Amino acid sequence: MSAPPLPAPGRVWAHVGQPFAPSPYDVAVVGAGRMGAAAALFLRQQAPALRVLLVEEGGLPNEEGATILAPGVWSRLGLDPALHPAADWTRAALQALGDVGWETRPLVALHAEAAPGRVPTPEALAPWPDSLALVDPAALPWAEVDRDAATYRPGHVALHAAQAAIRAGVDLLLNTRAAPQPGGRLYLERLTVTNTHQIVTHETLTVPVRAVVLAAGAGGPWLAECALGVHTRHARAYRQTPHLAAPSTAQSPVLRAGGLTLRPQHGAYTLIPPLHGRDPHGYQPSGGQLTGVPTGLRRETLEDLVALMDRLPVLATDALHLGRSLADVPGAWLALPGGRANGLPTFEALDEHTWLLLGGPQADTLGLHAAQGLAEAVAGALG
Ligand code: ADP
Image 1 (cartoon, rainbow, N blue to C red):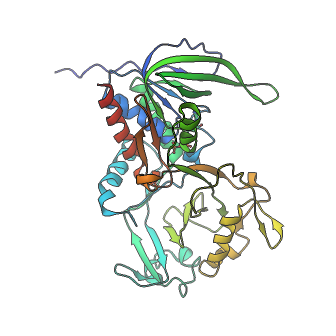
Image 2: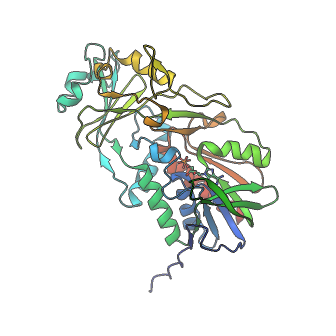
């Protein structure tokens, strides 16, 4: 038997010099972060006959947004066992995408109290003296180890998922801002940069679509509200990921203590601070002050790191880079799925044409499973 014919690859419009003639699509996915790119791919895999358009305001992978700054730590630690199958599905899907920088490495969560399954910290970290040196074992004497954990590069996930989507027949429109309009139309603004580096609209278009998937990250709920007047219970938070110049190797475990994750990266560490909950509407990220000196790190994160300094003494050294201004410390807006999703990646129908897909803080471990669920639901609804 001969193999079924491969679908014709989709088209890519990278810049406004390439004319885009609007034609009808079955589904438009707004946002090519890892959630939107994966959703577009899974839609074509579920329903190869659907005409799918993926629209991204920036490039691919986008330099802004949650994906590029996501920790890229896959772990079942602390996850409700009912979610383990979704986490395992996500792991398999991530690895199937190609080279996403997947590296199996343990995650060691450090605690002040003993509990079943915890072992003494010096014992848990014995294979990694450099990691043990970051911790005060008297303050964090107990450790829980996830040997199945792994790190990877979420930016590669967005890139590979989008490339696979194009190979599967998805059309990709870059440098284009999209907004759904009531009644099954998508409004598009194709953007370009002037020679004074201003982003301006080159042309506006509308495309007839049967369904729109909002995969615009933290901007998704806002887009739903502004464009469709639909209120959701989701929120957003601004998270910065400061740099810790303590040595790490390809073998170093991921460490977690007091809600802070230390992710070995590029021979040092990226710090992923805890999220405190939603930022109020209109919150403008700005740096806090430490002993009166302005820093680039927001106040709440600074306070968390100060509170951890006795348990992780390395935080009190000049290995911690706080920056002088906000621009010195990478940061991104993150969706906080609310309501029943309670922080987990989720999707929901907003009206008969529009769906919302959110990754958020747990997208590293569970995100692709939610994108797959959305693809099934949309493919099912379109028949
Ligand atoms: P996620 O983890 O959900 O994929 P990201 O923030 O990484 O979240 O991705 C969202 C993407 O959506 C970003 O690349 C952003 O540029 C894009 N985006 C946001 N709003 C729009 C819009 N109105 N039109 C097109 N793309 C958008």
